Every structure is written in C-alpha cells, then in structure tokens.
Image 1 (tube, helix red, strand yellow):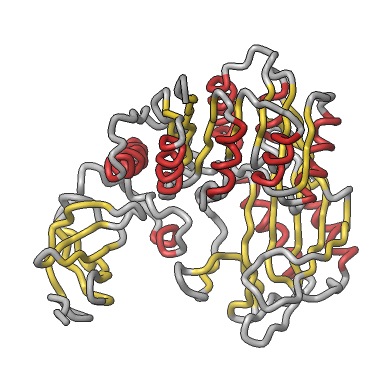
Image 2 (cartoon, one colour; image 1 turned 30 degrees about the vertical axis):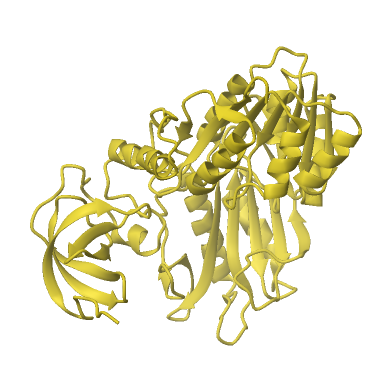
Length: 458
C-alpha cells in the first residue's frame, strides 16, 4: 500500500489550485490533494497537515503570503469554525460563479454539457436573510449561553451575532437568553442529560414581522414559566406566540413530539408572492423569503399556465408552490408524506380562498399511481424534493402519467443531474437553461429550477 507523501503535523508551503464544492482550498503534493479551509485559488500558504489518509488529507493555514483577488476583507473566524458561513471569505460575485460552476461541472461529468446554465440569481444583501434560527443553549462558566457548535464536534462556541439571520431574530434570542439567566434557568448538559433548556428557536415573518419563540426543553416544566413568558412579551412586543417543545430523548434531533402553547395560538403568519401562510413550530417554511419568492416566480413562469391546466405538486409541504400555481391553473393536486404539512396546506388554501387544490398524505409515487388509475392526466408535474432527489419509482410513475412538462426545483445539483439523466432516457429533455438561485448566501448550497419537456413521439 502506497503511503501518502505527507505526514500529520508536517509543515509545508503550497499554492492553492482549486476549490472543492464544499468551499475548501485544494493544494497538491505530488498529485496528493490536501483540503484547506479559508484558502482560495492562487494563494500561496504555509500550512500544517492535520490529517493524512491514503488518498487525501486535511491541513490548516498558518500564514498566507498573498491574497487572492477573490478574497473579501474583514471576515469573522467564528462563522467559518461553526460552519455558519463557509464561503464568507469569497467575494459575493465569486460565490455566485462558484455555485454556477458546480452545476456546470456536474453536467459535464454526466456528458450533458449541451444543457446551458443561466447566471445565478443572487441577493442585493447576501446577509441577515434567514427568517428562522435554531440555537443550542449550554452552560459556560456557570452561565446560560446561546451559541453554536464547532464543525464536526460538540465544542460549543457562545455567539450573539449569526451574520446570516434576520438581525431582529438575533436580538430576540439575546432578550430570551437574558430573561432565562435572570430566573436562573439551567441549560441542557449532554453528558449528564440534565438541565432545562436545550434550544431556543425563533421564527419571524419577513413581511408580517410577527415573531414566534419556541423553548425546546428537556424538562416537562419550566420553573416560573408564567413570569418568564410575561417578561419575554414585555421585552419583545413583536412576539405573537411562545411555545414550549419538550424533547426528553438523548438525540441530536431538535424538536420533540410534545408541545405546550404558553402564549398566543402557537402560530405566526407571513406571505410569499402575496399568498398568506400560517406557520407553526413544526411547519417547513423556506428560510429565505426574498429568494423563495424568486424561485416560485420562476416555477410559475416555467409552467406557462393558461388557466386550463392540471398540475401535480409532488412534494407540496404546506402548499407554498401549489398555491402559487393554483392562481394560474385549473386544478392543482399536492402530495406530501407529513400529515401535519398537509393539514397546514389545506388550511392555507382556505385562508387564501383558493379552492382548486386537493392535498393528500402519502408518497408521491403511490398517489401518482392512484391519480393515474383515476384517469387524471396532468399537463405539468412540479418537484421540489429533499436533497436525495427523486426515488426511481417517482420517476417511473411520472413517466407513466406522461405530462407535457416537468418543473424540477432542486437543492442538490448532484441528484438533479442524476435525475435529468433518468428522465432523458425516458423521453424528456431540458428545454431552457437551468436557473440557479442563491437561496443560502455565504454557504455552499445552491438551488435551481429546471424545465423538461416530453419529446414528441416518445
């Protein structure tokens, strides 16, 4: 077995040649790649090898001899260490090019280079965009602190400013933290599985400015909870509801199954493209409202609806895309595996007086087979699947329904390209440039909208 050309703790000087899709610099020693955080192409860096496995290693920068023209000044190391903003050292227009390039390279690898990729739709202000925060709470030097964990570890870093969250959310978290301190509430301890509060979750409507506070606790009861809730409402008049979520498991999953509403009705409202949505502690609601509106506008444009079409929304969640489409289609069918999401979707349709939608609980493939048996013939099928992309049976059941058009919203270019290939083999082709959208600035994630059409005669 050949040994790597470097050893742990070895010090070297390298030129960075590339960026990985996770935003790490790549430096090579005799073709052996070292992955290095906070290093950009063309920078010459002194490094220490942290880890050397057979085919690649990891290193960290001790000194930089020059700055890449793509580097931005004044970065905060904490955001990199905690993984909150792994691309913050890269200028924003370079971040957008980096993200577009991910899609281009994956298409090339799959011999689909004839598919064009449009420039990425970015943000005017690529910070403070998240409308939801979930921050862990721990005791540090006998004091309750909010913060984040260092990447790949359980080392807690106290923080007050999170860069990518709505600034008002950061302020509310601070107020809640101070009130919990005042009442000497203990934070969760992973080692002993003791303590009261595990996480503070805050959601804020981008347009409504309504705020929800969720206290995730290990304990069933919060000591002096009435007084604490009163103080939160006094300190933050924009808080519409306070919810206690009880999670007594030894787990990394944030929310438990039991919930108590401590103030308000457990919901806030917000809107996307003028459609109102009710959001609960468990609701899946896109965290970047500005960019989500752009994505949904692109989906509606791509569907080219005239008012006569039948549309299936195969991963409909709380109905966000379905309700955008319903305004232009004759009928929209939505399916989602999470029963609470479907209950929300039905409620959101009623709230907006939209009555040409049908929402079902189940898997996309099972309902598409049922709809097919019922003689439903969709003109358009819309997908917005999780990162793992589409299951083969979903692709097969879609092809059986033979819609004229497929609109695919993806949050993972690797599974998107795989699924494009599968659809291409079954008689569909991409008819417009793929439209990437920067839904998560400062991170390595990229969303996109792809339009496929059935090839005539297939």
